[in-house]
Amino acid sequence: DGGITQSPKYLFRKEGQNVTLSCEQNLNHDAMYWYRQDPGQGLRLIYYSQIVNDFQKGDIAEGYSVSREKKESFPLTVTSAQKNPTAFYLCASSISQGTGRLFQPQHFGDGTRLSIL
Amino acid sequence: GENVEQHPSTLSVQEGDSAVIKCTYSDSASNYFPWYKQELGKGPQLIIDIRSNVGEKKDQRIAVTLNKTAKHFSLHITETQPEDSAVYFCAATAAYGGSQGNLIFGKGTKLSVKP
Image (cartoon, rainbow over all chains, first blue to last red; front, top):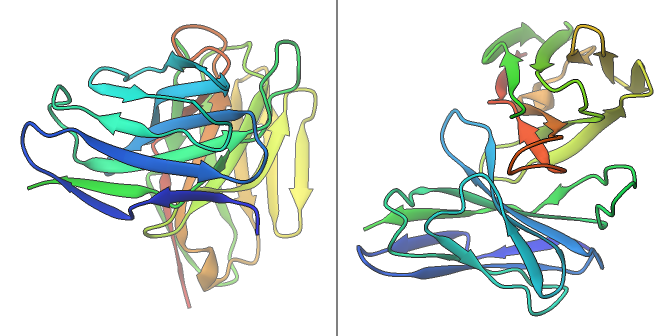
């Protein structure tokens, strides 16, 4: 089955520690996204990547970093600089949002819940 | 930048009744409006979407309407069933700012369908 796999489902971070969340997709999508979801809030965009080896900051990129070395993978690192990391993190992918094209629907994984010890 | 307001934040209906969730957006250049359903502990699932060149779209018990003049769009669920209970999110494309070309989400509506 094609889809988006996020791992782990639950993750705990100690103070001052960096943690990396995994996102893998086998949909052959060029574009991938990371969102943060807090209770009672909508989804907020952290980083996105339209193509391998390129990524852009979203609205709340501070304290996060990403890489896009492979089309299938878009890992997110929550650094110690992120002072309020407790949240539900969602990865999504889509066909490339190329300039002038119709907006392509985004499809989501089942998330990673990050908590602070 | 783009802002998306979603109402109500909670909605409770009896099984078989209809449910309506409304969203307003601020950017008149927005041209794509998806609706997502999120069940507990899961990621959002796209259930229906509409583009700005269409006023209404229907898929079985689910329909979305768009009023570009008023800048609002609505999700209509008819003949609700207990399995429709979930959190529903609307979104709109952002034409400007840091999220340009991406989606801005509403804060969600928790729908409860009582048997």
